[in-house]
Image (cartoon, rainbow, N blue to C red; front, side, top):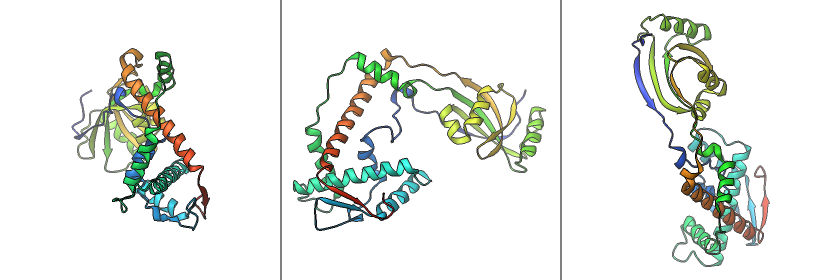
Length: 287
């Protein structure tokens, strides 16, 4: 079938190769505490309610309020319960490190820069963190347990005709029938062209049922598919099947990922050990 002469704009959202991909921020034990602590969760330490006992940390509701505000500014939505709990753990980790840094007088010359005190305290933790030996068997087990990270996902090249008029199910189906019949549609819609979209990206943007229907679609035919935000007129150009990763090819990448995660786990355990020196009290909604 000849392509309808819709006005086109290309969105090439091809994801990074699986060999360089990194897991979501909630999947690593303490890596988020370096990243979110400095970038996403820059809550000033004065949000904690001070008391006379320097070993007591009282977390007020203002901590959660600031975390929600910064998360929404970054992600465009409010954090769910799991994400909010992770942000709170980040804040507590940073507060403990900040206080430990003050005890070690690491604020000398840096009294106004909280992040530097935290990183100085973390450097002390890192100095006492040792990486255990690793074998190929250990790395293979790590690799097999995280195949979703390393396997190349199915990818889709597809087009979406964005209708400017009636976008109801009936309107989209009628428009699709016109496109499949070869009727010009430039007066009614614009064309979006997507290249190499991984399935997870399609699911996030349009919903799981849309991705499932697109995967089963015959190429080059316009279809009316229901997405999480309403009906869409789409045409699959081609789908690239999933490709399993090969451990031997990615061994160095796997070892680096294992090293990062193992060191993060050890840092997390060390900070939790330091936290045992403090009494943490939650007030109001910050629980």
